[in-house]
Image (cartoon, rainbow, N blue to C red; front, side):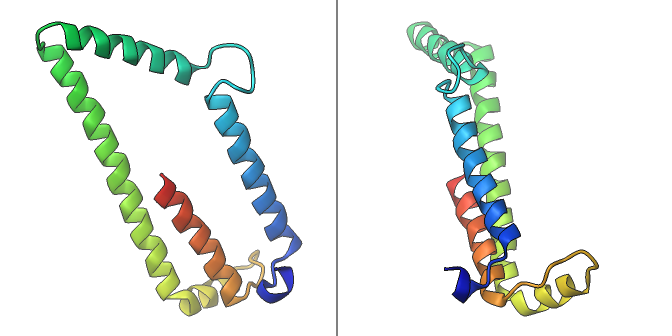
Length: 130
């Protein structure tokens, strides 16, 4: 893997750090890392109780406003992810030009086209997962 893509030690270290941070964040937000209740778990419990109460009573304006706000937040996150995905695909299409610009930066390490495209494809996977 390292020979054909010419990944540097910094690239491999960054990838390892990212994967470890992702796993630790997932465990922490699910409450599996520590025994105390996390904010995510507490909010999920509160939302479930609110939805059960909302389902048993007549529709209220406040409930409708809250549901609308939740839907708008989700829609904004989805549209932002799609815009970022489009930017990643534009980067893939202009890899040579981007690598030329990056090589002119003083602190940038030179990277092969394949390695750069693999990094951008990793971003695509993360944004698609979002």
